[in-house]
Every structure is written in C-alpha cells, then in structure tokens.
Length: 358
Image (cartoon, rainbow, N blue to C red; front, side):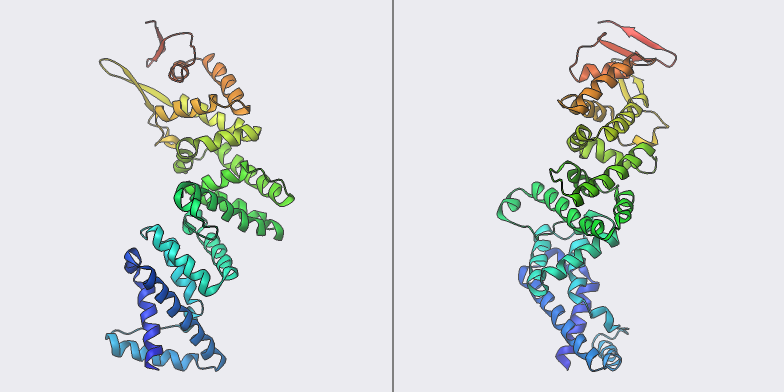
C-alpha cells in the first residue's frame, strides 16, 4: 500500500512542478510515464471495486503525513495520467525538443497510437493552435531529424490535415473555420494552413478542407482587422513564399492580399534626414505596426519573381498604383525591386510629391 501511495504522490509532484522536464533524461521520462501507466491501472482497479472515495481519503492523509501539507486528491484526474504528463511536455515551450521527442516516443510505446491520436486531437481543439502540439513525432525518421525545419512544417501540415479530415467526415467544417479565426496569431499554425492549400491532393475530403480554408482566410484577409497585427506580420515576413504560392493558385485570395499590399504602401510616410529620406509606417497604421518598408519591398519582390498569377497581378497592381496621386512610395518600391522606373527617385512631402532627377 505504501508503494502505491508513494506512486500517486510522486506523479502529482511531477505533474504540478514542470521544471524537471527541462533537463529530463530519457530514463527519467520513461520512469515517470511508466509510473503514470501504473497509476492508471490502480485507478481502474479501484473504480471496479468501488473503492475510489476510500482511497482518496487515505491518499490525502498520506500526503499530509509525508509532506506536512494538506492535499485534496481527486482520483478521477489520474484516470488518464499518461495524457497529463505528455500534455505538459507538448505545451511547455521551455522543454527542449529532444525531451519532447523522448516523451512522445515513450507514450506511444506505453499507450499506443490510437490513444496518441485522440490526445493530439484534444490538444488542438483545446488550444486552437498548432503550437500546442509542436514536435509531434508520429512520422519521425532520420531525414526529418537532420532537417528539423522541414520536419516541423511537414508534421504540422499533416497533423492538421489528419484532424481536420475527421471534421470534414463528420460534417463539422465550422470547427475548421473557428480554429483558423482563433489561431491566426500563431506563425507555425498559419504556415501549416498555407501548406495544406498548396498540397497536390485532390480527394473529395481534401477539396472540401481547402475550400473551407480558402473561405476562412479570404474572410480574414478582406476584413483587415487591426486586432491581428501578428497575423499580417506572419504573412508578410514569416510565410512570404507560401502566401505567394497560395496566390498563384487562388485568384480571390490573390486579389484580397494585393489590396492589403496596397494598404501597406499607402500607409507609409517619409522621414527626412540631412542626407536621405526614410520610409516608415504612419502613426495610424496599427494594422502593420511591425511591418517595415524593407518588408514591403521584399514581399513585392517575392510576388514579382512569380511566373504565375501572383506575379502577373502584382505587376499590373504596381502600374495602377503608380498612376495614382502620391505614388512616390510605389516608384521607390519598384526601384528597390530592380525594375525600370520613370524616375530615379520620388520623395513625398507633406503637401505634394516632389520629383527629383539624379
């Protein structure tokens, strides 16, 4: 009995105090998850014999005797003890990748793949973000270990597809829409969503999934909400190449995103120095508070490098923007992208554009 009581106390300590995970060895992780599995077995036995309440009382007494602190154990919390431990590993950003991999591998061995899949789905639904399940290793192989960036993005994309496919099958596509709307401040999540759109899979379920993603992203991009600056920063800086690839395939998203690019440039103002003029965001440009003029140039250049729809529409958009009043920012963008321009430099003053030939 003492050994069983100690096991519960030990596991609760490991669950409530996560500092140990940062430097945990493979053997420590194995011991904790094996202890969790033993605790689950004890709970199952107690429930079968209708002894849960009696054991709870005994456990609380034992905890106070051993640690001098009152505890209020609820044994039902231990019914899925392994899930509690692995969830801590998956959702704690301070735990090293190697420890997360050890924990996931050991969990698979102890609890099996079916239960692992259920836990993954639970975490994504609960957290509404791919970040909560970073470093999942169900498709782990040597190549992914060598190329961690490829591994992370590939697993993230496949993970979301496997879970969202179930929602499509159940007719619960609204969950996908809600997830996109709620989690679009997470760079890794956005990256995974965009990758789904450009994958070359055309099953009925994939097509439905892509349609929902396209509609949700189109709604979010068209709204241009000032409450999501992180979303825009990710598209402009973090997932620049991916958003261009998406725009090549989806004309509606391309048109909406080019309107956003126009907004970025038209929100830029100049600051004059003794030797130069510097472009930066205007005071009211809350939507793009973290996006610089150089980010805008890099984004436009990335679009122009496309040989598809994105490049074609970007070139036409630039021509249209340069024909409008106060177009100097677009002439400068075009110049820095290496394209021929009508003038070497346009500088916007507070009242009108000034033309300076050099």
